[in-house]
Image (tube, helix red, strand yellow):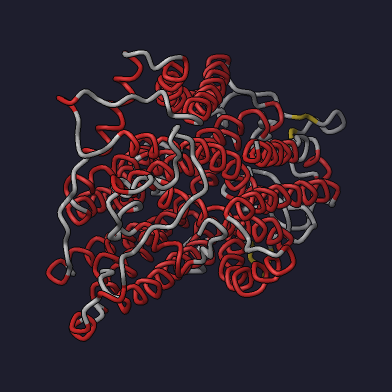
Length: 638
C-alpha cells in the first residue's frame, strides 16, 4: 500500500470499517516513527485468510434486506442534504433579501456546521453504538427539514425567517453529524468481514453505497433545484417553488428515518467501544503541556484553542444583522439621461428600470464595520490555528506518557501516531476544499448569469452540479483501469498516495482557472435583454448570451480532483492512525474537510465574492482558490 493505493469507490469506503488487526503493542505503530513523525503508510494485516473455516463460508448468507435499507436511507439523506445546499444561497438572496456575498457565506456556514457535528457524532457512536446514535439524530434531522419547509410559505417567509434558520443552521447540521460518519460503516457491519466472501461482498456494498449517493445528488440537482426557482408548470406555481422543493426534501428525510427504524429487527447491532482513546489523547497533551512539553506543546494548545474562536467569529461575521442588506437604503445607479434607476450600470443597456424608485445598486453594497472586523479576526484565527497544529504535530516526541495512575490501554506510541496524522489532514483538506467549495456557491451563481434556457425554461445554476457527479462516475473506472496503470508503466512504479493527492490539488486549481476564464468571457458577452431576468441571479439581473453548459467544464474538473484527493485521504487516515481509533481519525478528517474549509470559504467570500458580477471581479475569488491549492502542493512536498 505504501507504493500506491487503488482507492476507487468499491474499495475506499471499506477503509472506514473496523477490521481485526494485530496487537499494535507487539509491532511498530503504523504511520509513525519513534519520534512521533508521520511516515509512509503501511498496510495492516487482515489476518490469515487460510485459517477461515470452511463451515463459516457455507453458513454465510448475504444480508440483502438490511443492506438495501441502508442504501435507501443514504439515497434519501443525500437527496435532502444536496437539495438544501443547492438552493439555500438563492433563497437567502432572492427571497429573504441577503446580499449575494452574504448568502454565499451563510450557505458555507451551513456546510461548516454539518461537518462540525461529525466529530461529536463519531464519538457518540463510540459510546452508544452506531444504531443508537443514528436513530435519534436522524429524527432531529427530519424535524429540521420540516421546520425549513414550514418557513417557506411565500406570504410569510420574512416573518418565519427565524424558523428557517433554526432548521437549517440548528437541527439539520446536528442530525447530519449523527448520520454522515456512521451510516456507511453501519451497513458494512451487517455484512461483516470474517470470511473472504464477506470481504468481497463488502467491496460490492461500498460500490452500491457510492452509487446511492450519486443517485441522490442527481435527483437533487437534476430536478428539485430547478423546481425551487422555476416551479413545475400548473402543479407548482413559481412563487411556491421553494415550498414544494423543501416539502419533498422533508418527506425524503422522514422516509429515511422510517425505513431505518423499520429495519431494526433485521440489523446486527454492535455496542459502543467507549472513548478511552480520545480521552487518553487529550489527557496526554494536557499533561505534556504542564510537565515540560516545550514550545511545541504551547503551540499545540494555541492551535486547538483558537479553532473554536475561529468558528465563533466566522458565525458572528456571517449571521450578523448587517448581512441582510438587500433592504437597506442604498443609492442605485441612476441614468443621467432618463433619471431611471437600475440594479447596476450594465443593466441600463436593457432599459428596464427597477420596480421601485430607489433601487439598490448591487456593486455599492458593503459590509458593516463590526461585521468586517469579525471577518478579519476570523481569518487571522483560522490561519493561526492551522499553522500551529501543523507545526506542533509535525514531530510529536514532546508528548509524554501519563502517570501510571491515569494510564489506559492506549499507549504513548498510539497517542503520537494519532496526532501524527494532523499535519497532512490540515494541509490537504484546507488547500483542496477551498478550491472544491467554489462548486457550491461561485460556480452555480456564475451559471445563473449565463444563458440557462432549455426549451424556453431557465435551469437553476445548481443544476450544473451534475457535471461533478457525472465526472466521478465516468472518471473513476478510467483512472483505475487506464490512467494509473499507464502512468505506472511509464514511470516504472505504481502511482503513489502523495502523487494522487498533489495531482488532485493541481486539477482543482485548473478547474478554478477554467471558471475564471469563463467568467471573463461571460462579462464580455451581451446581456439577453430580450429575455426575462434570470430566475436565480440577484433580482433585476439579466442573463448573458453565453451558454451555461460551459460550466460543466469546471464542475467536471472538480469532480476529477475529488476522486484523486478525498478517497486517498480516507485511506491515509485509516492506515496511518492507531487501529483502536480509526473512527475518530475519520471524524477529524471530515471535520477539517467540511467544517474548517467551509469556515475559511465563508470568510474569504467576504473579500473576493462580489455582490455584482458585472462590475466586480469574481475571477479574483477563483485566483485565491488557485493560490491555496498550489500552496498546499508546496507544503506537502516540504
